[in-house]
Image 1: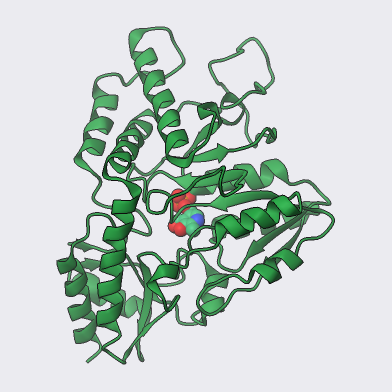
Image 2: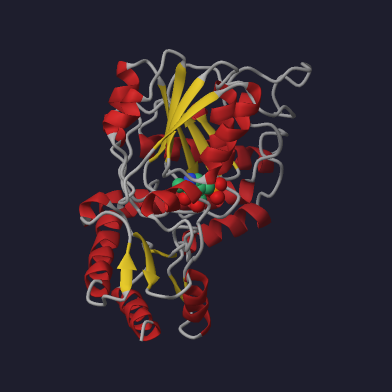
Length: 378
Ligand SMILES: Cc1ncc(COP(=O)(O)O)c(C=O)c1O
């Protein structure tokens, strides 16, 4: 199988990730932080080390403000629902995933207002429009770093500056960029960042984190055991315990630990330039076939290796099924949990076939996909 669905979940993972998951299950698979025996301590140590690795990768001072979650959606919900109260206003954009849009729309029911800023057909956000959406009661701006539909890179540093100017908090959804683009929370003025562990960070499914780069106390959205202050019937009010109720996904976090180490070793720059080279080849080749429509930014400087396409007169699911069954190429068709983004680029009725390039793809994978699309388009 040629795997080109890395925007959904990366595959394969580095071998060290599989090994770490196995070790966590077979050698110290106890409940981390819930006992004082050696296995529980080993698990807790791996978890703490993973907080440190993530803090290092994203330039966060305090590893205790790395909150483990089960995916990016979990972290986005924690931040959005933990911050916004009735009467508050939140600004977001059309390019967002449903994991941002649905919590925001849900909060309308308790009187949280929102503005969803329109985006261009290349999936770009107009900073003037974004800034002009800010009102007196705006508490939060939530944007993606990279669109999961078009691969468009958002100007996060500029958005961070707008947030600071207006004293509005910034929540960044780095689901598509973490592990691919350089992210500096301090430099970008990002207050909260939600990441999945299973995409660019090369960890297993069931992992993710919310990074908190300020002193604001988020309200927790669930309560439970933390292994700390057990005599109290109230949730501890310190991080990470405040937001981490229940047993951790130790095998997952151990795998994520190995994924982040792999990235730190190989270097973000090297991963990004590998994917950019493949992206360049892919787009140049596809452009030769005028039956193939490519969506997203014209310049590869403005996008990463997430490429939606359609073949004239064909349904995206039909193309994806052919790629899967006849050519053994894995991609994702349809609406990609981003209905407003599809609306922005004009594919809300037809969907698109999304190719997600990853750190282990080779030029031969790209050329096989080009050949398959050319044949299907005949
Ligand atoms: C931009 C974006 N945000 C959020 C998510 C949700 O991530 P998860 O499935 O880890 O919750 C995704 C997943 O595809 C995404 O691409």
